[in-house]
Image (cartoon, rainbow, N blue to C red; front, top):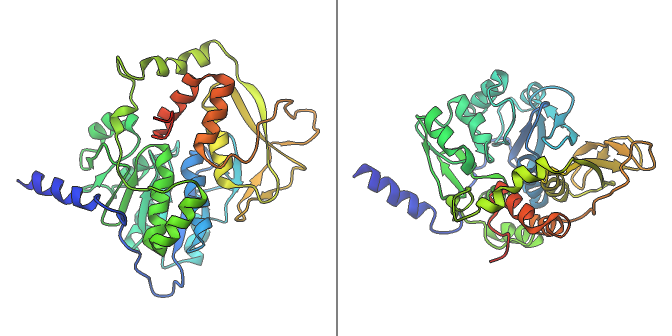
Length: 353
């Protein structure tokens, strides 16, 4: 009976827009303080830059890139950015804590100083938002014990086995349980970010930001099972994961960046092209000085235009949607490779139905 009631309550919570709890202003915060944390070893670039870029576009909160430690944040594709603060400096500047902490997937999912910091932020009243397998980080902190959560479909069995104190949901794009919010695979970073904009600044603002990104629906509706490799469905697509690696060597390709570059376009292009297994994506700028994005995030370029190690092959810049990037990959490397990357992203919009 309790299970049935829980399912009915969950279904009601996902029945309409406005699925995340409305932001409640805190004393001393004119606007919400949002910390997007990243590790110096490896942070999933889409998980990090999409929430950062979307929330900055909304201009409804103070959004800060926060390093777990060190002078830079390293992405899984090799991109490096400079943080606004590290965890210690954040605590000094904001002793009352953040309103939201966004947690991408990170290689060091059990790094104790980060887990302790997350618990401290939650104790101060922060909502903790995991993107994709950032849920493993949050689960390791214990903050998901006794709560519902979700993450990338590929880790579902692992999560059910290892984190038994959490009720792991499938077939949902994101879920909120109190102040713990979690989202599904990589591409869920966009809808959950728009849901956060709605929670903070209202539906019209979220709709305006969504329209600028070609998105009109950011509900939690989702079908996790459609992405996994199974006989009779997706298996021939997933085979490209091996054939692209076995029969091709990665080439160095340049991704041109200049002042005011779009964080979202950078994330999608760098991430998706790296996942072809045929490309090592290097950012290329006019010089090697840190380069500010459209919202002030500073990137450390990999190469300089005209340098001896600058790739001859260059990628197009400016594709602001994942669909655009996947279409380019399909044209160059084949439809199955593009489709497989869409499955890795848990992206429902490709190929078009």
